[in-house]
Amino acid sequence: MHPSDTAAPTAEQGLDQQQQPIENGADTGKDDRPSDEEILRYERAIKEAETGASPLISDILGMQGLEKEFASGLEIFQRKVKHLSQTCKGMRTVKRDGNCFYRALSFRFCELLWERRGTPWAQAALARAASTKDIMTEMGYDMSLLIDFWEPFETALKPQEDSKTLLEIFQTEYVSDTIVCYLRLVTAAVLKKYRDLFEAFILDSYPSLDAFIGSQVEPMNIEADQPHIVAISNALGITIRIANLDPTPTDAGVNYHELSPMEPLEVPGDVPEVVLLYRPGHYDVLYPSG
Amino acid sequence: MSSIFTKRLTKELRDLQANPPMGITVQTAEDDLKCWRVTVRGAEGTLYEGETFVLQFKFNNNYPLESPEVVFVDNVPIHPHIYSNGHICLSILYDQWSPALTISSVCLSILSMLSSATKKERPPDNAMYILTAKKSPKSTTWAFHDDSV
Figure 1: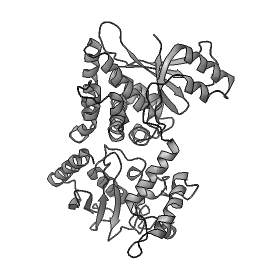
Figure 2 (figure 1 turned 120 degrees about the vertical axis):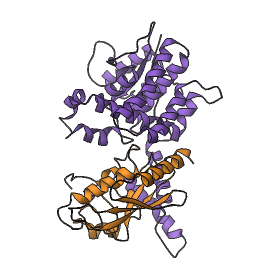
Figure 3 (figure 1 turned 90 degrees about the vertical axis):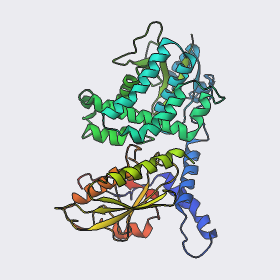
Figure 4 (figure 1 turned 60 degrees about the horizontal axis):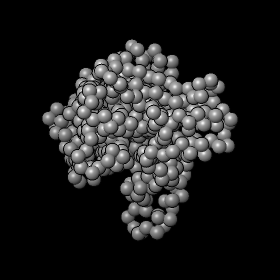
């Protein structure tokens, strides 16, 4: 374990370049190094420059943006994008910061709860969401400390009487990240609870399930993969359908990958699902027509 | 900025004072809980038995979403993952931080790291590192490639 002496990421280089003038211009005397606060400010500025000034989650946009993005791409992508344009009424882009899956899922899940407030499904889904606290406790997480992470999610699950829209909630960085973090911890708890099931998929690449959770699930800004998605789908009792925008040939227009919970919510009538758009390394929210 | 910060640290302090894990004592928690000093005592039967060290924790307003800055101060243990300026090479303090971790669990991880050392020595690149390192270890780009100690 050493500080990396190989290629440092650009953030680190950018930091050095930006620090220089401040150091020179700073008051002479006690300490010519930038303060930790300054360093953090620079890091944040650099991160923002890298991910663009894009919001954590956008308004509903038409599909033109996607068409433009792939306009000069492979023909197979263009065909799939065209199919998506014809079958979807819009999408929301989510910030590319490694948290996009959790942010997209939690936003759309809450949005469905707002849209369907008072329905049997909404009641069952709320109860299931609240039960995630029990899974956490059961798996050894200290909910007396982590209740702070549940509370913002609980607030977002319930339609607000005051003027705050769901979008405003999810665009407030601290709140939005806290919700993302809560879902990460729930994902970790479910992986632990069904250890035998998940180990089969994980032990090929990681020494242990706990090592996987410690490096790939709990830390922020680490992308979600199949096991994470299966786990959180089970925790929330929601089907997650993912349009896969990859170069694999298909007759179906676009391949959808569907992950259904092992224990779905048992409610009469139609049950909604969360639909996401996947491109390698990134998830957005998708709104199919009809 | 966030009330989670104060609420969480208040609770952690209370828990640590009421039920301190073996070998861990909070000395001070000052500056509106933003700066703590915690004493850790080397476990019996290890190279650090009988020695005590002081860890300094600094929290920013985004704690516990962001990791605390943790360094040894004053008497820095001689250990292959601890630099002589007090910086600690431990992944959970940097990119593998999770809000499910606490001051207590961080101290325990550091104690366990001390306990598993088989030889008291500085990291091989200590001299170079302390020349170039920034004040906060969180500004270092760490590479973690040894889980055995």
